[in-house]
Image (cartoon, rainbow, N blue to C red; front, side, top):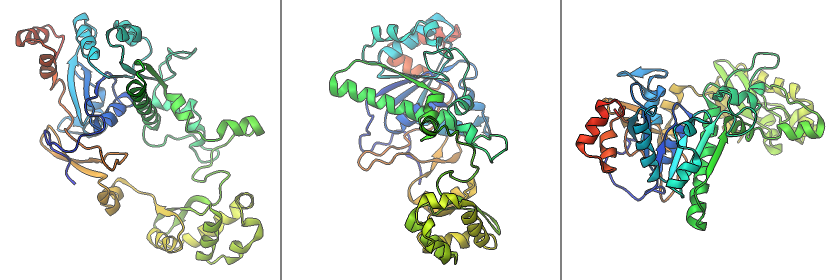
Length: 406
């Protein structure tokens, strides 16, 4: 499917009329801005003059710009300001005064240093929703420490579990801590906007810490420690305490099989020719299966090892047992289900080439999100945004000549 072209009009979107000023960079704040923009919000991204958001130069570049940037900054406008200068700070405050939402992910105290503390901004704009994403939050003894997503993943408890037993903890492969923080921030923004609209409430500050967003997803980790003194340990590809659920070797790779439901387990054992395990009274429920998990995993692996991944998946599908191969980028790009659900969209970039980008999530039946515009060049919208604020051509040119805008 091809992404919607600039200027195309369709059904009104859920966040039409919501103006967001995004002052963050890299991942967490901008991912929130992307999500809001996908559903109709006008997102004005303030970037530093000169190089702009460092994400423009992260990972693989095409035509001098990261293709990641093309995903993260779609549906946004770029205004380049040198916020080290007082005049640029004044412009930013004027933009924020007319906004519904401010998103920032700087170290705590940065906004305050620019004369944009929440109290000062709410004096200008009482209904403003301010999302602040940081490593450790806006309070507490660690608030001033530098914190990136990987540190949040470690402090939140995830990195300890992401390893094979006895081996070094590994990263998930993507910046999951940042993304989890962004999603929690998005939820907070939507709740604050709803409160403002439905109850006449004022604007408020949403304080999201990277480690807390990760910790919120750690299931029963702490209750198990508190109740039983159990420190959950790395389980590799298995799901500790739930069986069977693991990755199993095949003749051409690995397959994931989740046979941990009681009836599913019986079907799985029948499919691999182990009716004895299917009928064993002590394996009828999860607790018994956990006690014999090594035996069960061994039986499944013995069956999968001489077979191909595709053959195993076909057999499991026929037996109604959840199973799947480990997808690579190529697998995703060639998968018909991704295409059928519009999860692979073709986006025309401002540099003139087309690139496949992830579709919009979640899917709303009446007011779906969509790609309305491609990622902007640095400062591409500076003049238009400043003109809409009432600045004349001469004033804008003067600001540019002094290096205040780009």
